[in-house]
Length: 211
Image (cartoon, rainbow, N blue to C red):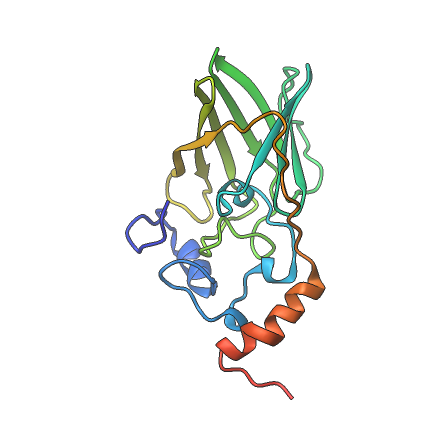
């Protein structure tokens, strides 16, 4: 959803307080680069579901009899979605950047994925505009194949700590199939590059002078 002050999640008081503390580079509340406190500025993993939302990057989906694997262009990260009929473990391991996901086919063209066990505040933001998420967040993705070369993804998030009700964060976002020999360009977040960017561009743009 756009960050325009209108399409915002239904925040709890705790969620609104955390949201107000975030200083994002994008959206209607954006700040100069060196004033941002986005975890991504340190090349931390984007985490999930932010990886689904990040600036229209390319995504590759691989499938075998037991799992679906999603490969993200940004930072060469991946997710495993179990499709062997398992439920969530009764006791989840430690929270993860990309959570624990299980999926099933709702029909011939719709794949439904549920994810829990996620890292939250302060390590991970929901999206690049600074919307927050807690470790209580649950996510449902619906991948719907429209035709031979187009798919739509809908993402609904539920977080009783920060949201008063479930919220559709992405609604029927279109994804177009690329050719079989399409070469996805490498895109990594390197701490040394981030440091150079801050020194040469971010700090001057923010009015910060370092000697």
